[in-house]
Image (tube, rainbow, N blue to C red; front, side, top):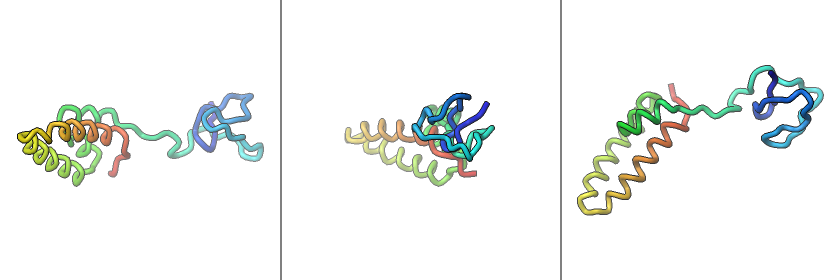
Amino acid sequence: MAFWQSCGATLAEEARFCPAYGRVQSAAAPAASTPAPGAFPEKYGMAALLSFFLPGLGQVVKGQIAKAILIWVSLVVVILLSFVVVGIPLLVVLWFWQIYDAYNLPQTR
């Protein structure tokens, strides 16, 4: 199976245009047999799952210790703000953001 050099999409034998971006595959450049590095963004489902149950744990698994500590400190502040009602929406936003962050950003190790 071959892949487009520019984006890593699967290359059909008769295809001249990239299905993802519409670019023409140059005749001089042969199709790559493996996807280009960085063609597919890395996802971290396990890190997101861990962050779902314990906020910040996904960041720890990915080696982002400083970000995990920042999440924990932010959670304490937001929980304290929950006593004056303003913290409840912030808690929900922070919780969803840290799951998204654990799932999408690359590992630092």
